[in-house]
Amino acid sequence: METVRTNVAQGLGEIILNRPAQRNAVNLAMCAELRAAAVAMAHDDAVKVVLVRGEGPVFCAGADMKERQGMNAQEVSGRRAKSFAAYDAIEAIPKPVVAVVDGPVVGSGCEIAASCDFVVGTLHATFRYPEVVWGTVGATQRLPRIVGKQRAKELLFTGRIVAAEEAARLGLITRLVEREALEHDLAALTQDLLRLSPEATRLAKRCLDEGMETDRRGALAIEMMAIEELLAQADWKAGIANFLKKDS
Image (cartoon, rainbow, N blue to C red; front, side):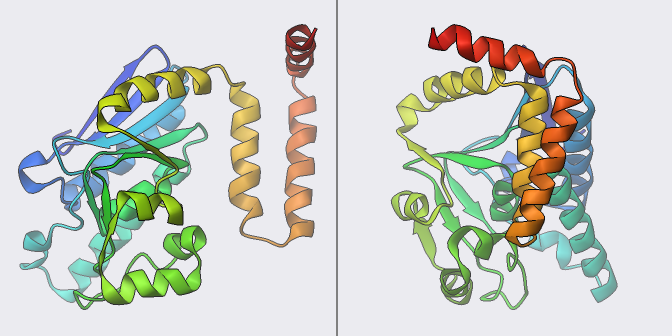
């Protein structure tokens, strides 16, 4: 792959946006390669936790607008469908997926970050949703589920830059750290995530994601099915034994 780089070591997988000269702007090739990387991480049993980050000082500058200049309406629509498929593939990884942000996040980059389970960001991170200001439509679904409908409208209709501290207050950044402490904090976080039961994590993630798309009764039914699926497996008693051992 040319626009995305991947690494796997000791249970940790990395998906790295790799167009630093273009500020990691998302083009057609990146849409396809990002989706392929996410699918590969999802099916690789050696991967327990996934980090998504950008090469260079910018996480992602949004869609590659220079590429769009030569496209007709049908081609632009097809490109958007492929970008949606990439975001969905990240979201569908049945393992903890963490976006690592240490610089600007714009447009499509915001969608990539929002497709992850949560975001670790530094004080150098900024977010911007310029779609409406640029005369297009985007970020209308994941963003309001994070910040609420009215705040999402304000961010989309103004296209303003959101600094790291405000991004953390709004929930765009889940864990805010100093740049100097980023790698140390990431190492500690990933070690904690690697200790989790893969099956319990997969099922809890499914319950959270699917439960948010239905009412409380439906969400409880989803959780009950997950519990029954977990109990049908052989290792659920080991979790109780480990808990009792730590508590004693």
